[in-house]
Image (cartoon, rainbow, N blue to C red):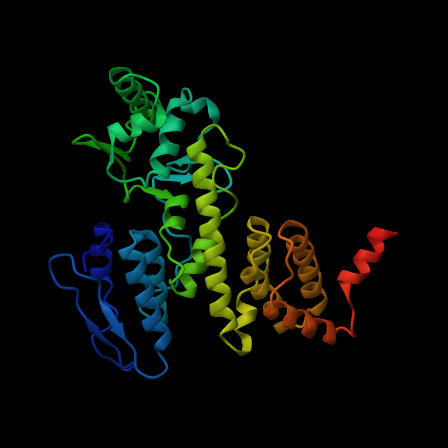
Length: 353
């Protein structure tokens, strides 16, 4: 399987974990031609090491070489070959944040509004991310950004925007990193020089493992370009990513609830994610069911009843229906665990009074 981040391959190859030793590890050296990095299988007691190397392989396959380096360093530390990493992985030269709002960090410096030299560069960057960031035809960009302009005028606008975006943040005499390319009429954002939260988030499938889901959910600091309603395609993409967020939250909750013991304690952020998912779609019964199951598992029947009461009011008022049987059973369980408390009735009485 080819590496999405070939620049990390030399680092992986230089990590001599062990060919054989007292830890019972066997290493298959990576072969030529850009195949996957060294695959480590662990003897009894070292299953965690194998998991770390598998995680590194996944990060490399997704083009996240810096994060893979940190994981591999942790694996080396377990073997005693190297000290544990003492710092965060080296950041990409260009980091673009769009979840929650727009921020461009260029070589460690956050750009101010005055560094953009007008709005065309910003608009182009937003469009590139919405369209996937890779191999986007100039014609498609022109149609999206300047639909009412004639062909020659739109192409000129695009040339100006490309120039400005390439030079954004560059000081006099400096050469900006080549993070934006134009080849054969197609524009791309460099996957090796850029970290873009919205793209990393969007490419995480609900079928991913818990570690990758946690990483994706941590990226979702807020809606895509929150507060920016300047173009319909921005609003549409915001809605798409919000729905994707709900699916990822549901998938992560399902994995957590399927486990027993201390697994819930390792998912401290999940209740907040479930509540935020209900803010995206307050009438989603599956999200509510997962939240109530979580709260009941954690011994919190009163918050579970409150969430159910709010949901019940919403579906009755907006849809004219009652909650489903599964939710009614969860509400009955919660009510029984807190002495028959009926928050729905209490709130109804309070509103009447």
